[in-house]
Every structure is written in structure tokens, then in C-alpha cells.
Amino acid sequence: MCGIIGYIGKQPATPIIMDGLKRMEYRGYDSAGLAIIQSDSIACHKKEGKLGNLQAELAKYDLVGSVGIGHTRWATHGKPSDVNAHPHNDCREEIYLIHNGIIENYHDIKTALSAKGHTFYSATDTEVLVHLIEEHHKTLPFEEAFITALNEVVGTYGVVAISSKEPNKMMAARLGSPMILGIIGDGEYIVASDVAAIMKHTREVVYLNDGEVCVLTEGGYEIKDLKAQAVQHTIQQVDWDFTQAQKQGYPHFMLKEIHEQPDVLMNALRGRVKQEEGLAHMRGFLEQAERLQDTKRVIIVAMGTALYAGQVGEYMIEEYAGIPVEVESAAEFRYRKPVIDEHTTVIAISQSGETADLIAAVKESKLKGALVLGLVNVVGSTIAREVHAGAYCHAGPEIGVASTKAFMAQLTMLALVTLHLGRQRGMSVVMGQRIAKELLAMPEKIKQIFAQEKAIAKLAKEYSQYHDFFFLGRKYNYAIAYEGALKLKEVSYLHAEGYGAGDLKHGPIALIDEQFPSVVIVPQDSVYEKVLSNLQEIKARSGRVLAIATEGDTHVADIADDVIYIPKTLEMLTPLLAVVPLQLFAYYVADTLGRDIDQPRNLAKSVTVE
Ligand code: F6R
Image (cartoon, rainbow, N blue to C red; front, side):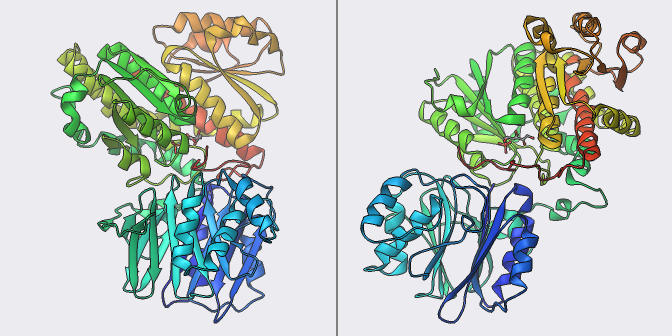
């Protein structure tokens, strides 16, 4: 979603800000802008569309100044346009501000400020905040005006502001939207909503907590709460390898990240899986070992792709650990009245660790007394810091908006959690050893699927002529059918529906004809015969079928129109293989159609608003 960056120091601010915005491009955005403090005024430029438009605009000006802010916007209130892009300014063009999140009481504030003579130029909720600071700045210094205004808004924010009246100061704050301070050196700082924008300059960071304000000057930095009381923070080192955040010869991040999955899987297993003992050592859970052992019920909460990983996890944990599991969209969970007690463990799964609905679900679960565990990819993210205990997914930076390698890491982590919980309960050592052995064999099996990539690309080209698709699967691959459909719609913009193969005849089958193909996941598992019957039902109605089947299964090839093979594995681990051809299929359909694969329209990488 939106990206925020602010720089204060001695170097020219513009190139640093533009570079930071470029590094946050992957998050998804529709307009961009920046504001730089000049000697006694602030120069601001904003453009709808990609950063190239802003860059072309900036080329017309000679922007000096070593204090500035920049923003990539993903529209919430007000359509994408130059005028709605950030930074936003007050009536006197003295204060400029960038904001992620939503000011929920913007309408009331706007009405009150309009009555006091403020005039508004944009359709955004953000603009009211800068006018509110302006109103307080009439009687208070900038810092106090900023904090006072934040105390009056309801909603979420990651916000950075500058004032031409106090040109050596920058104010930043967060509430429900990430904000990280990067310490470059004495008097030189960068604030951003994403470490990707900071890494080039420093690895020393301070993660602001909700309700904290950061005052930056060339003389140093201070962190305060919303009552303006000083707060102590420790400086942390970020150890992500950001060379990974480059395409390294691949045409798109999505394809590169699909190909990274054997390594990602290995990284998630490393140091955790003990084949001889048939165990998974989850060091991150150690502090909560007793409560985890005592768990009577698990609730998995997540959104989107991570939610589908959770659904696979539900089947794994119930079958092998015998603990009842529910899986729920965090967006639903946060607003109903879930029954939770101290014997409930809530597992929050997230790539970014910043998904707004999931943060709310985590807080609600903690409040109700559950043990809350996190399976999170981004180190130091809000959810990683908010949970009682957790284990990082170690997928590395995921840049493609459509999640692929993070999903693989999530499935792997859930298999490890299953092994961990299962062995604490009824699972035999032999079963534990089988799961561990098979997990360790998985990277090689994924590589075998890559050997069919050319054939998958060819099929994808053929199938790209259709406009509608079903993705069907059962049991462990039920959720994979949904994930396959989600991948296709995200990057190709074609209509795709995930369904349980057994659900098809209860209505959706009415849609099947020769123009409505189905991708059917039919590995040789405990529901093989059932899915095969579902496949026959489609063929009987002239529907084209692309099957994802187990290597050597010639019977499927006789019925389906096209087949992609995956290696044989344990039933519970088939999702880790079945998803790979679906990711490649989505990628190559989108590529054939010439889509913007890494930044699909309307999508954001990290959904930091409700
Ligand atoms: C789909 C996708 C989204 C995310 C969802 C949760 O490809 O990326 O559906 O999975 O927005 O995001 P995280 O995992 O960051 O909480």
C-alpha cells in the first residue's frame, strides 16, 4: 500500500527520497509526490501514475534542500489524481504532510475547520490533518501542534510532516500503520514505512510503536508518546539480504520468487526439522511451551493467500495433532464475538506482518486471554512484535504483489507446527520421521516441477484465450484450488473461481460449457477416486480440463484434456507441490496477456487499512 519516506540530514534530499520511493514501488500505488524544504519555503510536486511521471516533472526544477518527504499513494478517499496525491498542505502552504492509514473522523474535523475559514482542495481524508496541525500551529510550536492534532484524530496513521517555519525539524508518528526510523549518522535520519526504503543507507533502525511520535532534527532524535513524554527505545539491526530484492535476470519478481521456493522451503526447515527424532524444534515458541502444550483448540487467522495456507494447516493439525482447528478471515474475526479462553491458541499468519485486519484480530485475541503465536515473514513487523511468541518464515523479501514464495514458507511452517504439536500428543516417532524426511525431500521435488515449465507456459498461452475458469480440489487441495484461482485473477485479471470439487454439482456446474475450462487438482491421495468422478462430470458437459496429477498417473491423462504432473509425496504435503504449477500457470497466462505482473492494477502488497 502507500509508501512513506522522510529524510533529514546534509545530503540533497530529492535523490534519496526518489530512490526510497522506487524501492517501495512493489507495494502498489497510483500516484506519487514529494516536498522539499527550500530556504524559506517548501517546494512540492505530485503526479498521478508511476514514479516516472514524477521524475519527469522534477527534471524541470532545481530542487535544493536536505530535508524532505515523499509518498506513493494507493487511493482510499478520492480517486487517483495529481491533486489527491500526497504530500498535502495547509492553507498557507507552510506545512506539508504525508500519511498512510485512514482518518475516520475527517468529516467532523473538516466541518469544524471549514467554519473557522480553512479551505480544502482535495477529496482526501489526509488533507484535514494538515489543516488541523495548521490550526494548532497558530498558537503552538510545530511539535506541539502536531501532537495535539494527532490526539484529536480517530483512525490510523503513519504520518510525517515538515514546516517551513521550523525548517530543521521533521515530525513522524504511527498508530496502526508502520513507521521505522533509520539512523544514518549523527543528525542524519530517514523515516519510512518500509525497511526496503532505508536499507541502502543504514541497518540501524528503531521500530516505532503505536501511539509514538518521533522528533527529528539535525541535532538528534527523540521518541515521545502522545502525551509528549519521552519513551526509551533500543536500536535494532536489520539483517535482511536486500540483494534478494532485485530481479537477478528474471523478467519479473513473481517468476523469480516462484523459482526461489526450493531455497525458501529449506530456509524455513533449517535448524528446525530433526529427521532422526521425527521432531520439529520451534525455538520461537519456547517461552510459551507450557501454554502451547496445554492448548485445547487452535484458531488460525489471516487474510488472502495466508488464509488459504491456514486452511491447509487446519487439515494438517487436526489429522496429525488431533487438536480442533478453526480458520477465519481476520476481517470477520475482529468484528464478531469469537469464543476464546486461555486454552485457545490463535495462530496469526502474515507475510508483511502489517495487515490491518490481522493486527486487530491479534490484539482482540490477546485481550480475550488466548495464547497468540505468529508465523510472520517480515522481521520486526507489527504482528511479529505484537504476538506472545512466533517463528519467522524466512522467505526473504517478497516483492511481487502476488504472494508465492511466502505461501510456500507458510505451508512449510504449518507442517512444522503440525509435527511439533503432533509429537507432543499422539503422533508416533515413525510418523514424525516420515513427515520430516518428506519435508526435506520437498525442494528437489519442486525442482522437478520446474522441469515442465516450458510445457506449462505453452498450456498457459492456449488457456489465455478463455475468460472464465474453475479451480477445483478436495481435502488438502481444497484451499489450493482457491489459491490457484486467486493467483490467476490477481495477475491476469481473468475471472477465476476456486471451489471444492465436491461442491461443483451443487450449483456452479451450471456454468460449465466448452468456453469454461476447469483446472482440477487430482493427486493420488485418499480422495483421488472422488475427484476423478468430479472431473468426469465436467467432461460430460464438454468442459475443458487441465489436471494437476501425480507423476505416472496415465489414467487421468485419458480423461483430462491436458495434464501437469507433480511428484508423489505424503498426502498432507501435496499442497506444497500442487501450488507450484498453478503459480506458473497464472504467471504465464498474465505474461501472454501482457499484464503488469509485479504490480497488478488495484492491488497493494501490504494492506495496512481495513
Ligand atoms: C495474494 C496476496 C494477499 C495477501 C493478503 C495477506 O497474492 O498477497 O492475498 O496474502 O493480503 O497479506 P499478509 O500475508 O501480508 O498478511
